[in-house]
Length: 576
Ligand SMILES: Cc1cc2nc3c(=O)[nH]c(=O)nc-3n(C[C@H](O)[C@H](O)[C@H](O)COP(=O)(O)OP(=O)(O)OC[C@H]3O[C@@H](n4cnc5c(N)ncnc54)[C@H](O)[C@@H]3O)c2cc1C
Image (cartoon, rainbow, N blue to C red; front, side, top):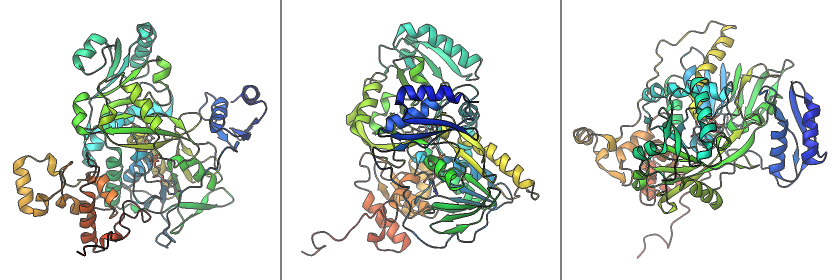
């Protein structure tokens, strides 16, 4: 249990009595007022104990800015009103979608709701796509447990879902010889005691032979050959599609706004912008909003403090500078066990080069703005790994928000005051890696709970296999010709950078759960992901969507209902 007097002493030292800590129902609750967000976060970190079950709930009032409310879709209808699913999953990121897929095996009604206009619009759509090995994670943490299990599941997970996956391996590199002894002992402990078995120690000379583009100053490193790369949004969407094919009801643009609970604390109604749902069990997989969802059920026993991370994507033409995942560590063990895991540079599964991310605490849970300092920080660091990394090759950048708890671990447990809510909270990095293992465990827990009420049988017709849209670019010439002969739209190239045909776009629009928007098509099959970033193909994609949906092109949206692309004719149209 936490020593609250000691915590208060530490807080007094840092904040002169402006922050108070109390121990309440097994959680440490902080109150007070601070005008600097970094101080609010520091207070939470100061109060966090090694016992990751005693969470910090940070109720310190931030007076230095206005924390914006959660963004809610403008749509209002009754599409989900009166539904009574056995299981309601809140959040269409990788956690929610992977759980939906696992639960779709069973004879039960599963419903998945997502507030955004597509799946993978939170952290699952804005991360590095690295399948981690867990070398930097604390033994005994939930993160370590699920990352080791999840990593091992990835080959089958991705092949069942027809999602490209590779294991190019990861180098953690050091330039300071004085770190040799501590890092060597660290490596021995991780490999032989903590279960990160694939790790290998390497001298700089061997690393340079294997990776000639790495910086010459590298003295030694640790190599993990089972680190992998995957497209995280492609995988999330594949899980959602497979879940839907197996009977899960999924609703986009559906935000949970409030909940009603009964005297025993159970949720009896979930109110959304599209009506009220009355589920038996609720799974909270709401990413950065998981603590807000917990609060709606009067069950907030942890706090999420958003942590922004920015990545840059370089053109595929620079792919020859790296064929793996790598990062340089200047400050020793502390640095590569830090919250960012040091960022890095890697060849993505789609053969771009990704540089980043950094880690910046922020108070707005949806502030995905990208700041030049972030790119500067990551490039300055990663040029020390691969000197040829160049900002001139950047074709785009993006920012994602990590859902960190103050204990820096996942929260995977039933509600403490709300018995019918299961929390998947604090699923920050490496939550993508952990997702298949988390989903498999949550499946067992949910089936076990529902089986106490009635018999739950496995579906006879469940299929874990999903086939994506055929990828013309990857076909051998004979298959290409056959495909084009069968469907001439496959012979019309729309996106020249990524070689995507009209046939693929139409097939994509006909798949389950594909919103008819430019970004939804882009995320699924990549038109607009190349060097021109849609400059050439976006109007063509919009035109194909308009024809397919039988709407005017001006009605085609970029991502959500609010994201208008065409506002009207310019220069008076085509008049001469
Ligand atoms: C910059 C960055 C880099 C990362 N790199 C890696 C990596 O290389 N490898 C790795 O393993 N992990 C990585 N991660 C972590 C990984 O991305 C996350 O752990 C994972 O995506 C979390 O998935 P999730 O489904 O729990 O959350 P999310 O993907 O955030 O999904 C939660 C969903 O819930 C929805 N939601 C929220 N509130 C409501 C509501 N009220 N009603 C309805 N829906 C709601 C949100 O819109 C969102 O779509 C990284 C994260 C970041 C930010």
